[in-house]
Length: 180
Image (cartoon, rainbow, N blue to C red; front, side):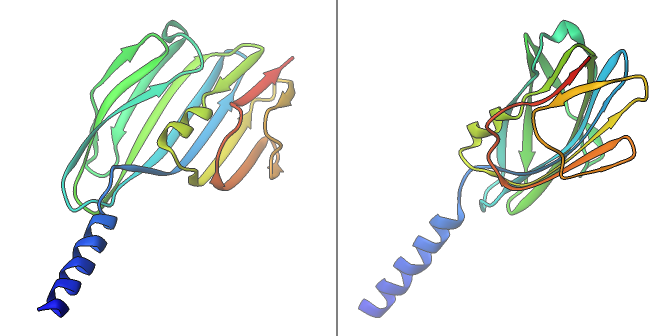
């Protein structure tokens, strides 16, 4: 009897360990800047490691007021459908639905009016309570734009595109492009 009790305790503790909330594990973001716009086009990976269906509300902040943001798209790449969202003062809110033991890829794209300081809000990822497992960024710079500085030093540059690769990334500042 004791042997069965130990086996049941081991199985239930491993099942409890496997359960949890939705995790944010990866982002791939392509940025582009020209003389009038700063474009953000990203794919965000969310994982449900639980054995139950999950619905989770997401607040996606922008670095600026929404009146400077346009052409917002939130798209479920798994089901090839738009995800309804609600505009906030400086961002959007939407709900994710994830099947048990599943990964959901969400495309979020928008553009904002270019300024001397163009920022993407990276530090909010700390609200997930964990580092981003993998992060891949690219920044395409139009010929007419003169970049003054970047908040993160690129890992490589090819022509007019800069690239960053991060693992176990815990951002300590925004992704910012300062232009002359």
